[in-house]
Length: 464
Image (cartoon, rainbow, N blue to C red; front, side, top):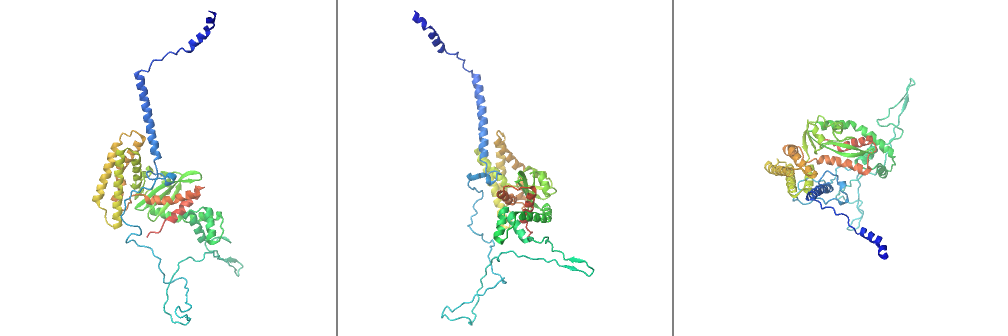
């Protein structure tokens, strides 16, 4: 018995340790259904968010407005929407070529006489002339700086007054560089986008002259001030032009984001820099306010606030947006977007062929493609009318805009002076973007404005 009593506390502890907690009742059907509904909602939101992020990752320069530099090393292979023209490589038949031809009055003549007869070996000093073959070499003369000294003579009159001859225009210091060297330096800097250091190195290599970087900067300021009057003429011509291309692009200036605004025709280019992208920057450029011609641009909303202008929207931008729909939308909507792309490219091909041949475009064929395009847009807008996700809302907005702005997108069909796309403005903007690739940014707003003025002057050409 005593032994049994000694095990008593141990037995109590064992019994306590193996006792089970009370079992909670299983969840009811209503609780399981509510939890299931909540999980479905969370999963649906997660899938929607994943689809949006995947669509964002799928944005490239080929299906959106992103610049090609953003594609990185994994940029997609080129995929052109153009069809094969059927012609071989080389210059098209009938297109004028460029051939180097001899001139009648060369700058220098060098006569080469034969030494001995190639038959008998006799001398030919007094032989009869049998003929002369002309061969001309076009090359640059040896490059070196020429120093011109201007002597300002002073004369003393009989009355005792000493009068000195005035210096020619532009000769303002005892020693200075001339306008031609300054023009070449600024052209290398802002025309060919060399950095300041490389411009200095190029001048030294080409002309054997060591120019300070500050001198190049002063040249830039002087030339930018000189072309200001020319830009006023360019601005006035753009205001009265029948068709003008407009675009804008970001530009880093003094460590902050600014915007370069472009207005251009086939002969005139005006680039301006402003801290704002919208109407304030456009008003400061001085072309769109009061402009009554056709303004070709993308669908950036501030352009539409200028009501006096007739608007033409860029079809190339719309095609890129439709390519994005093809890449991200469900199959039925993607197929309709593909049909719209094919119709738009077919319209472009018909218009280009008519311009090349100097004839009017086939209205029946264009009408067929316009019908295919409108049908695809209407059906795609209907298919996305629920706008259940952010991506679907974006697609629906595109289809709706292309239908609402139908006349603006089809302006190239009704007005032969209007191009199908806004590539002219894209090309004008593309060159200044190289400046930021070379320099990273422009350090001051004044420097950016000088760059824009010089680029405008370089790109503008006299009307044919």
